[in-house]
Image (cartoon, rainbow, N blue to C red; front, side):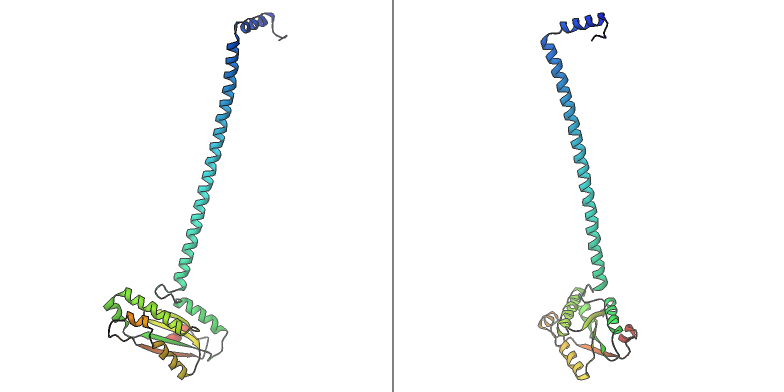
Length: 219
């Protein structure tokens, strides 16, 4: 205050002297309240920004997780459709051919054989009782074949044609195997129309040359 001119100090003293205690208290209170209110608003604003950023972050994480989960589901579905027949649950011919080829690479001639089994007149089932009943019957047949030939690799080649890949065996044993397969389970018999007898036509290819094309072996 020593630097103020005499007139300035006098004016300041008069101004302070003209204010009563209530005015001074109110002014100080207003200043403090305004500072606190401003600090609170800034705190709320910072808190709101943080909450907004956290919400955005969790939303983004949720979107990424959903995309990853959907991709995994689609991948497994694609693999499932590629490797397993959707009607019977057996391996597709593509997977069957791949797996058989891998085995034949390490085998000698005469070790293995391929047996084909056609359901006779299966068109009668589809035409007379619908494709849904026909597919249900194919699925049950696949389960029956898998149960009767647990050591074989089996696939549905197309429609009502099934392929078995197994170790070579004598003709009499092969005939016994085909006879056993053709003895239908009670569950399959219940699905057949009354008086309808399900029969099969079988063929066998003895694999003397493992390097031959598998599709040609089947044909």
